[in-house]
Image (cartoon, rainbow, N blue to C red; front, top):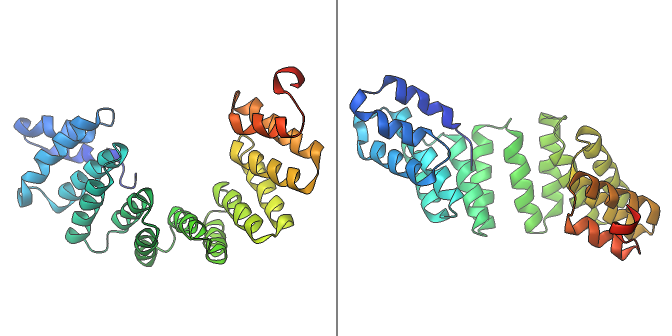
Length: 243
């Protein structure tokens, strides 16, 4: 749940009175989630004594911390507070969508991603995540449309190609799926999931040697990964002996 970078709070630290510096440092750091929550909460409690920007950043950072602790209800509440302060704050809708998706509230996630897109229609990540939500609902046509839009915005990003490949596979468009996995791998030669997905499609097509090559590559990139190992075993290959 990262949209506003933690570094935004450097402004708070540099501009803060010495007596308040600790709370800004706590809210600004990224290692100790409880410290983030404590520091940001102290800033939030100051209300309008803080600037609008400071309050937004404090809610954002606290929401990120809550999300990392898997306390999604509190993360959602903090995103909602940001939206109350600034109804056109696209990152808050995006982050709230992420939290809703983590809770399994797919329709609410889609609604928030859609609001974020209306405010900022050039954010590829929002299209990717809305596409994932549509795919979760098995609405693969809308998922493909969102991944395609993300590709148009950022054609050098591998993720939407991989995700679109999965959606094409679900629709039975195997050649399209393989082409997208190929592109994802070309853009990111260390993309383990793309090799796994392509290997599985080759396995389903009966192209054993290509499937083995892809599963072997996943183990080369991520030694011991169980999915690649399972794929090889299905194809009669024992990784410990044959790699």
